[in-house]
Image 1 (cartoon, rainbow, N blue to C red):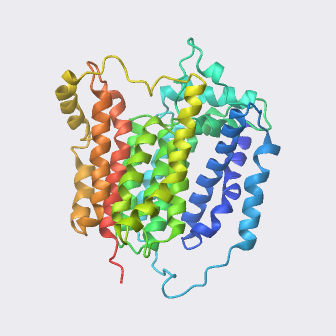
Image 2 (spheres, rainbow, N blue to C red):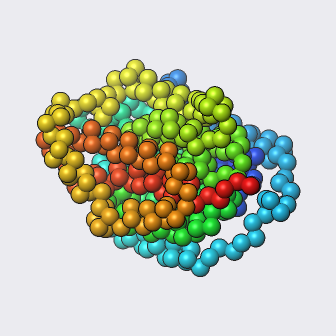
Image 3 (cartoon, rainbow, N blue to C red):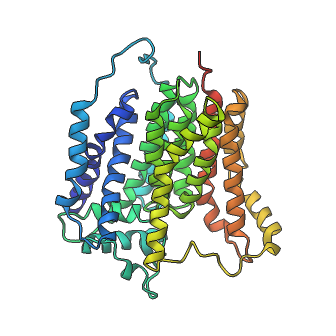
Length: 424
């Protein structure tokens, strides 16, 4: 029953997120389902967070009606997209996607074999989710207790998702279901990338998505992130970058999708806040129009995710949740050179730098100029990592493999942007 409840409540996020239908009706159905899932997840998490801020214990009667009502209204009001020569994509998926399916299936088998389970999931991600789900509240007092290894200021999206799956149960988390959600997050992120790339008529999108799935499946196993926040982080990052990168003519729909996804990024991991600021601060360069038009459009897109990030930070400060956001005392510029050398070594991703080389070759075969904002964001994110690792014992061999997946995703977005056909 615990596993069935986890599966049903996870699948329920898709109809609860279908209020995004008008924004994604032009995408192929795998991409639509992926974005519905992400929007449904964000919908219930935001409501749980807001209710906790107000001191109100949540339940299904408080969490379900609003997104369900929005989804029903959206379904009734949205106008079906009429197929035309411009909107119809009759290309069949290429056989290279079978390699992506094989890599994804391999990840599932590794998760089933408990080869990818994270210690952090056991120590605090899962424990937070079970505790919050049992008391139906974001329990800050339990989280920040000195005797608990909880990282109290880590953003709450993943534990709140776990708490959502406890609704109607006895307060017991399905620990196997939680780690099996990792392949689901990867599938959803890849589906969104693929659907947006197909819409933008990126000819190499099947190969890029296959390489993305194969690499991240390997990274998830090697870095043991099953049950951690990295998979949902990459899901929201992939949706945001795909929406900002893959378009034929710039539209407000894509900006709204990106804003929603970036809000999810801000609520998922600490480094997600840096990602949000970088993407909001740099991607306006890739827009069309005058400087003023680009700045205004970029500011509109950035308003929601920046407000979400600020709300979480203010909540943490007001509740005394300070840990990771506070600089450590041993940070010192004297360690910058050895830390830099360690970071350069870790950039190989234990694959002789081949992921960067492979995507770099694809990038150079396209319009490199389109990729510049994403390449700048990638470099700045690496500088951010260098700054937070600059200490006597940075332990990059333990955590860099996880944190470097975000700058690689920015590099992949630049590769896709370089391959986007020039607008007629």
